[in-house]
Figure 1: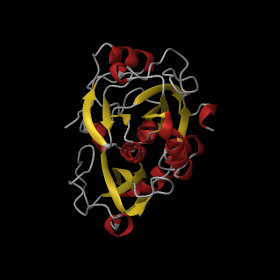
Figure 2: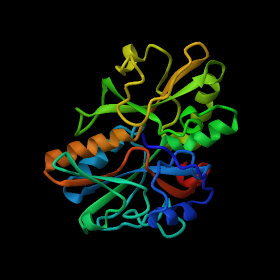
Figure 3: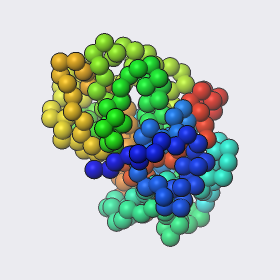
Figure 4: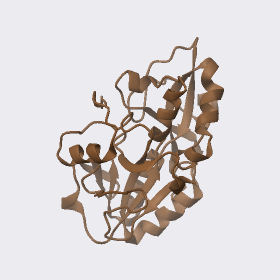
Length: 276
């Protein structure tokens, strides 16, 4: 199980410093409340345009925050201070020809000037807003990563159209489902997946998600009280990871992603204009 850190950081600069120093290696859910977190995909420029097209055709699953030029590892739109995407995420996965070859804490040894970095919105970004309105985030309370699932009935559009949509799931108290939909549907969260794709117990029929929600595809399972809680499923940036892995396979190239739940915590707050 990938547990979150027991310390809650408030400042992204402090958090990224400790990540660089190897003092923080956990998932980033609940960290730096109010700041936007980003999924990350790095691909060689030979396949980058196809991935860009995929994101543009699947904006709810892969909302683009920033695309860095080839060879650049310093974001400028989501960063107000020094950020190095090679070192400032807690954990990375490296793939070659579509196969996972290693998981590392920095990617300097794999970096080259042909690499293009994509930063995509992450649903961790709206968890603080939900909590501020009294909505419990059970995976945070239980010190777990969020539960994520493949939607076998939903295929994505574009050059990697065989990629299956990935969703994250959070149990929401029955009387708070409408509130959760309202909050995450606000304009400020459009670039971090927005409102849920589906809330309810017909998820196998509607989405093709495993009937047994304890059988997660990524992350950690969270128990649901079927009497008082409803499973709500949001679009998830791991969809972009699956597309990047497919791109790596097609191009016979390397690709690098964050490990599930181990995001880049940016300097951008959830109400900043960069997200509008």
